[in-house]
Length: 150
Image (cartoon, rainbow, N blue to C red; front, side):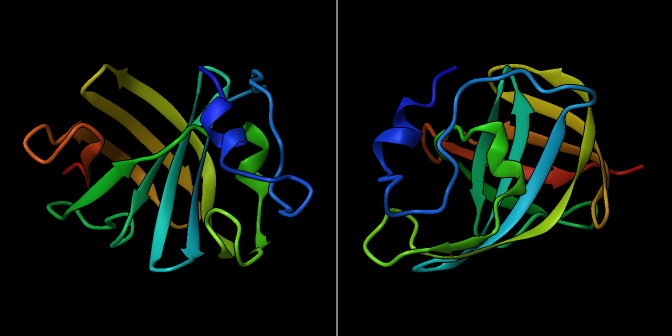
């Protein structure tokens, strides 16, 4: 994994976002959901994997009830330090707007394949089994995110 795209899009002399390196976390892997008020309010769903936070923009938020499927658009990987980021990204910078942590916790990895990821979240708001599946008909970066039944 690389953070090249993440770093390329940002000027760290202007934004408070953490510059990052690929690093291995300690303990259980983390997830974070950040509410992002940029051009359009959305939520960023991030899972620690191979030293980075693999990230998706979820316009309607992470579904909290089984049966609801929400579009999740794959974005660039973020550094692990981003799991603690809250703040204001200045106008003129990529992703300008307010970022707040909506939920954070750890997860158990059940399955990580090219087109399907299954995790069990243990957060303050979200808990249970969540599945991401690639939505190939919609495009290369489009996925569906849903909470599994049971």
